Image (cartoon, rainbow over all chains, first blue to last red; front, side, top):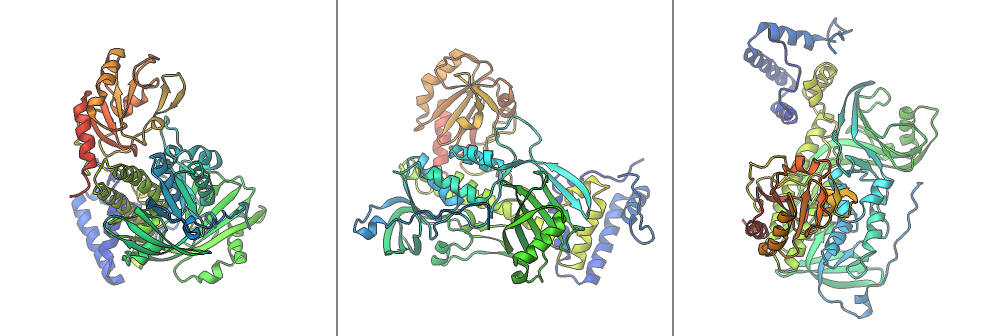
Length: 76
Length: 555
């Protein structure tokens, strides 16, 4: 079974990716930025195409949010 | 204030004002900062005389540039000043990055051994300038440093540059074939020529405070995002010599610079960092904003811009001073070749091309760091905080955490003038690459370093098996027709009486790093960059590669 990727998928080019992501939001209102992020999540989740991996990603992203304020440390 | 005692350098009435108009100089250098002084020393080592004009008479006030990278130290070593700097400086190679009070990760800037110079030293700019001045004074016939000589006019022409110089005794004219403008971010020469200096201003204010204290802090670079001990967005601590620490606070754009630079206020911030128990004394502080900008061209006829006058970057990454020294390294041997008539003046255009590439790399990296450190909108902050939140758990997120991508040597692979690579040769030293160091033993049996033998002149590095190889190479080297060519033989074991200077690669690191099978030949530029490499010794090919390099200026 495939697991959520943890290592640097951009193989050292992460700074360029981050810059690209920030630039994509330039000139957008907060609401439009939220919409952009939602669409991005949908596109990238579909690209992954594996509900189990997406579930892992959702769990990792939720850590520390909402009621899960304590967070989990098991896979630190 | 201060552990450092500033001693003004003597102003001397210039001979031109005593009625002795000097001859036209080969080179005028405007600015006696690290870049201008290093340029004068590099030129002097090539036998080229220069006059340095500086409007002031002391070294840098405040520690300013403190982080000097390995490549810079290798350049300083070629200029004869690195030993003193490394002895005095604080050596470090590990950066530690924290979020609130948790250490996220560490990065090691020099994980392998076999290099003479450390990854970084921290040394206050005033020491760097003092050591460079001392070194410059060892060339009395070649370097004429003139303090309190301010350039007030620049008139470039096709064959040279005429300047007007203002002194306490009045103004005088001076002419030179070339002028190097090393007069900093607010360059007078750039302003006098009316050149636009365009770029991007970052809306953020920072406070740097130098304090002297007896703290057992590590030498590592330590950076906090959202520290628990300061209301600002980030804090960076560097250790300097003399128990001086640099603490850099990110204040936010709305901070009041006049208020924040009050020493009492700055020291209150410091106190929250170091705690109540440590004795600490105020040294210096400065509130700064920054921008990333560069001249479109670094060469304007016979006026060449180097260092901050040509390009400025954010300080995170230590790419300002280190970038400026790489400018010097690239420029001076070319100027010397042109002034000796060995290369056309167009060679200087290759400086523009190669160092513009370096400046763009530095601007790109320091701009990205600043974007990460200073989120400007709600969504930028969410993305940044998302990276920090995931970083303890995910290596990919740690790779995105950007507290500064520290200065690395600039690669020039694929640039005009460098030979195409021969990919049968192993190792990473492709044409355009700055040479890696490695330990070697000289023919006299003394241990040393490869880079100490390279640089300052065109150099052929040849991997030889035996005396017969070396004899053949020594006998045919003149066929390359390269003036002042040095030919060095790398051997596996010491022969002792080869007809070429011998570098014994006892640890095998030269062979490993340079793919040094027997016969492999490197041609290395005077700035220690690989120009070409071949599987075998071919003096005609060496000569052709060198002459192609010298003609590589104009497009």
